[in-house]
Length: 143
Ligand code: FES
Image (cartoon, rainbow, N blue to C red; front, side, top):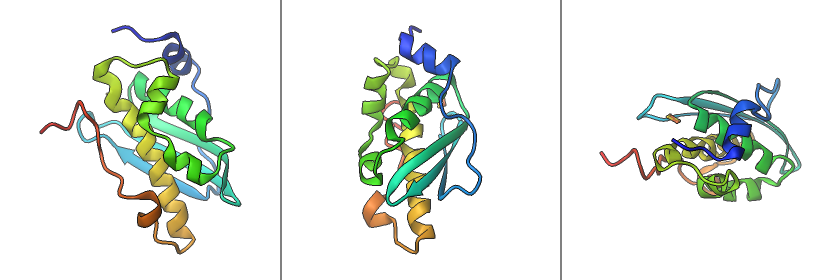
């Protein structure tokens, strides 16, 4: 399997790994197929993501996609972070092998789940804003 230099870089030196004490939103998602789990922590100020950290029990591609996804949403308003798709993340990494595309879905879902948690804590129903978080993985959910 061939990985791009960017994937290798983010896998070897993941950015924003860890957890945030007193995070404003925490999301946890799992991939039913491979059993990998990701946890995402957000610090939110005035609707802007001021800090983000993640932890994952996942494969290298999951680590690389979460790492670059955290860089893509840090300092961004929630509305922009919600637009981030796993496709954009894969593009930012200069691609992923087809068998590993589903790993990038985990990062997108973890962000959405953490934002949902944030809205819930504010007493706001997250569903109309975030939508339902589902596994829309193309490669691993055929059954
Ligand atoms: Fe499970 Fe990559 S194999 S997230």
